[in-house]
Length: 186
Image 1 (spheres, helix red, strand yellow):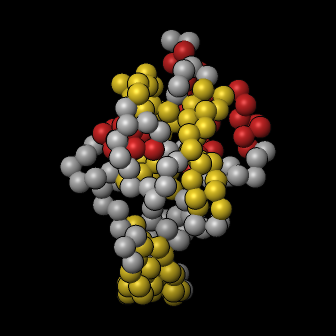
Image 2 (tube, rainbow, N blue to C red; image 1 turned 90 degrees about the vertical axis):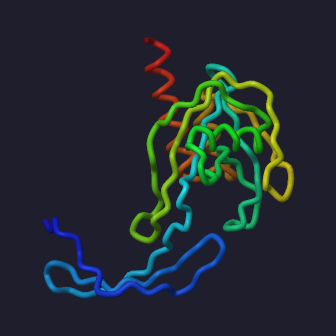
C-alpha cells in the first residue's frame, strides 16, 4: 500500500467566487502515474461550526432553510462560519443566537468532519450546545429561519423524512447522542 502522497506538479486556480475556489492539480503518484484532479478548495480561513443545540436532555433544535443545491427547503442543524478573531465556541454561540434565538452557557466540541475529501477541503467542527437561554442577534440569512424542535429518541423518524439528509447533520446527531449518553451516566 502506498504511504507516500503524490507530488503536486502544478496547481492552477480555475475559478473563484465569494465562497469557492476551484483548483486543478497535476499529480504524480509514487508509481509514476500522473493524473489531473480538481478540487473545491476552502476559502474559509476562520473555521466553520455546526451545533446540536439541546433544549433539554431529550430535544434539540433544527432549522428549516432554503438549500440552493437542491432548490428547496431542508431541515438541518444550525451552522455557520467563524468571524475573524472568534473562537469556534464564540462562533457557535453567535450562530445559535442568529439562527435559533438562543445562546448556550455550555458548548462542547465533538470533532471535525469533512464531506467528499477527494474533491473538497472543507471541514466543519461539530459541537454540542447545552443550558440554552433566550438571546437573539440579527443574522445574515435572507429570510427568517424556522426553528424545529426534535427528540433524540425520534432520530429514525427524522432520517425517514425527505427534507433531512445532510450527512454532517446526521453524523453530528449520532455523535451528540453518544456524548450525551456517556455524560448523563457520569
